[in-house]
Image (cartoon, rainbow, N blue to C red; front, side, top):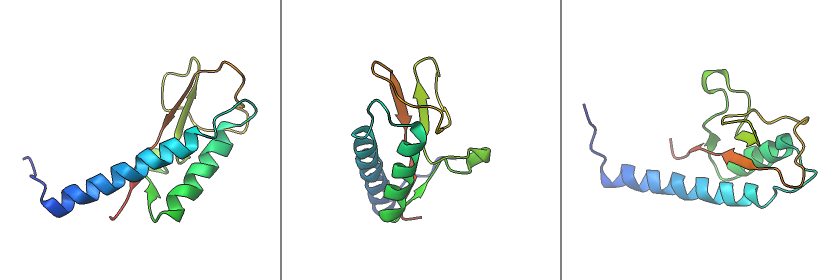
Length: 102
């Protein structure tokens, strides 16, 4: 069965999307050589909570962090770690999702 969203539900989805976009932009601005993916995760977690939201990946099916970070040959959904420190020329992917106005 398909649930047709009402205007309030649609607005809540828009708000969450805007917050996720801002989170991605702010986290992405911190991507530079010498920064660990754990540092990016910690920033994202703090930013998300500061804005009254919850990180959707955190604890989802046991996922231990607030964002997914993938460097170079990691296809997707990498787990942030203090051991994963960015280097010049790395290709970085960050996945962010938020639960907002639940």
